[in-house]
Length: 514
Image (cartoon, rainbow, N blue to C red; front, side, top):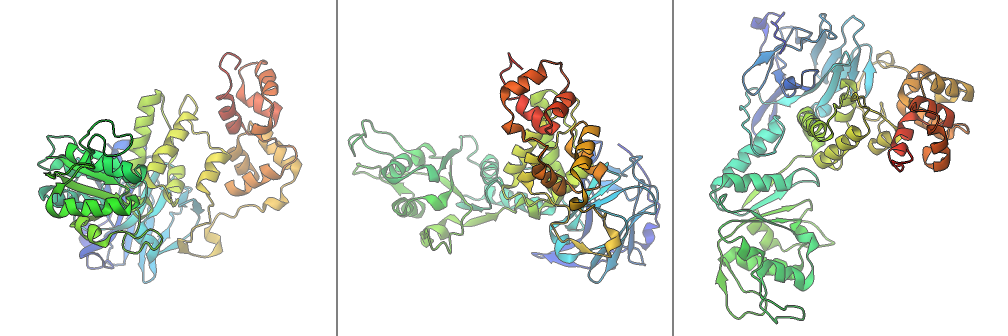
């Protein structure tokens, strides 16, 4: 790893000069975490922003030093990072980011800046992605000044302070035998947390039993959970114990608990209260020793449309763990992304090269499907990547994320701070076609040559009478072009359709003909 020394006089660095914020009793200070780096081992390393006496902090190729969880330290070290520092300055309204007086491009989110920009406090709470030299992406956020060294805990990725707190809660919950309610949006990893609790508990010798309550309804739900005696109802041809009995001595994880029927909720409450249940059609009760863990993305306290049994809720949340959405833990974005990329590379057998400026843009997206959505997105990127790993960015991927460089208001500054894109209304049809032809019908290089934003470029493509939507081109026409030789650029030029979309369409054609 690149190793460097601080260029600034650290004797002037001071914690007392930093604006202090509290996070449930914790002191939070401005922090920089590496989201993306040519050496992926660096991803996740962080450094506190320690202001000097002038209220400034310098970031360059050789300073500061970033710390990994294993205790190793290193500088950014990449030759594309300027030796002249980018300057962070403490202001009453937030933090000012001043690019260095060099040619190194600096990007904030999806927006390139050329002079100072002030990041507001609200944006710092969730984290701001900064890209330097199109090679390294960082997250500017708030974190405790002293971080615990992260130890592996199943598949719970992320070394930010939000996940540190989740791990602490998991370890504490595992030591007890109380029921647990895991709350969080869809895709935040609720089942992973349940498995981690079970793995660390005294019940780990037996497998955890899982059930999605949304898939159970009516008598089926009661029979599946509590068991049924032969002949209890039409179709009950044999007796079976039920999932709760299967989990006797272990853990039962009930996902989507908010979707359990009212009758099942009442039955669950009794088992939680006295540890006894009666299978359907049976006159005898039996005792069970089960640790219940439930999960939901619904507000169980105030769901007017589907009221939840409140005594059951209170029983379940003897321990309550709230999982943060991905957009509120941007400091973990790089570690999650790197993990998914490595998995895709291993599965597909070829590299996936995601540029740091794209990572910077992706990190600032809302990701309503959270970690699950990110994983699926990386899979799509990897599948459609070139053999050398180059990412094929197309209109479908852009529309999925609704990327707009100026969509999110993260800071303020004079108009000169921002790259001024050309008004797409001034782009003629002949200019558009010439740019596409000159760039092999690759969308983003053509947009760059025209000086228009990504969003504007896709709008121009849709409006053009000459540019063809690949899904509307007959298969036979595509096959005829392909017979002329294996040249995707030539195919796209002849068919007058974006190269990236054509590549995806070709991959769906019959192999023997393609």
